[in-house]
Length: 238
Image (cartoon, rainbow, N blue to C red):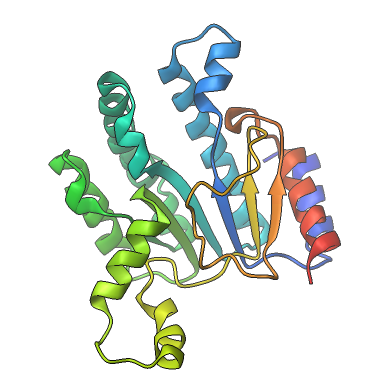
């Protein structure tokens, strides 16, 4: 982070900061297509935007981030692309933990939110669970990685885990504690110009959640876009 960015961060700290940011990281493939690149290159560029978001958020003091990394519907993509994404996820999680020392340095608790039972790559499944277990000792920051996820599946798993015989009132009082992502985001960011939620955190998004759609593809996300998101939150929060 350069001096100008650090100065902007200090300026943003003077106002209200969202505690929990949800992100639909959309547009990797379209970014690559526009530049006549391979789709895999778009995903690699998207990882850098993910790292940038983590760095900027941590410097600003945002305590929780939930990212939509891979939906259950994404399994229907071309087999080669799905296999590549699994390998990329393994590489980048190792990079995040060991090469950058991001977890220990920032005391980040990582939670893997999704149906890992349908994840065929057992090595990736083991790595995700290992990463979750390793970081469970921390609580300074939270990173919810929604992988092999959609809200329909999350809700189904929650209902299956809840006690039977609850009244309607008891059901809704307890539901949040059984969801993979129990906390409501203060703001939801979606890139690439799409104006839909794509089955992401549908119950957690409440009347006071600010929804911010931007036209830029995920790999194009800039520091200015991040700052604009914070200012948009302040302008529109209830």
